[in-house]
Length: 68
Image (cartoon, rainbow, N blue to C red; front, side, top):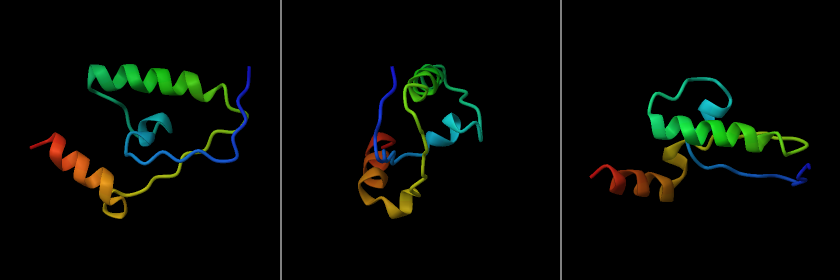
């Protein structure tokens, strides 16, 4: 089965793991990384674009709330 989508936006930093630019160390993140990598194969084309936290106010706020 393939999934067609004109564009999918992921607004987080974990995409770097999916692109294999760095490895996940946290066991929970490793599970999510494995699942995301497997799910990506269902798409005919799968491209991730990084949105820096500074350019994504909502994600920046949520990350600050999660760590406080």
